[in-house]
Image (cartoon, rainbow, N blue to C red; front, side):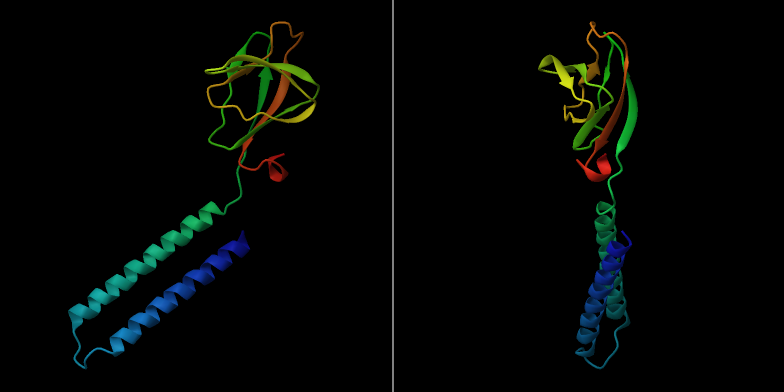
Length: 156
C-alpha cells in the first residue's frame, strides 16, 4: 500500500508540475504589462485543477485499499432460518467443521438442501436468502461465514 501511495504522490506531483510549467510558459508569452485580475484568475484556475487532481488521486488510493472482509459466526439450528447477507461483497464463503446438510431459502426460487463439505464452501447466494438446518438435523452447527471481494488468499 505504501508503494501505491508513493507512486500516486509521484504521479500527482508530475501532473501538477507539468500543468504549472504550462501556465508559466503561457504567462511569459503575454504582453509586458501586468494585469492583476487576469493573474489572479489564472492562479485560481491552477489551484482548482490541483485540488481536482488531488481528489482523483485520493479516489484511486481508496480503491487500491485491501479488501476488508466481513466475518461472523453463525449458529445454525434445526428448523430455524436466519438472514444471509452479502454486505455488498462479491463472494460469500462458509466454513463448516464437519460435512453437513444445510437448508437455504432463496427468494424467488424456494427451499434448497445442500450438502456442504467440511472446510470452506463457496456459497454466493443473493441477499434475502435465509440459511438454517433441516428439521431432521440432530443438533445445531457452528458455521464461520465470510463475505469478501477476494475469493481466496486473504478471504480465507
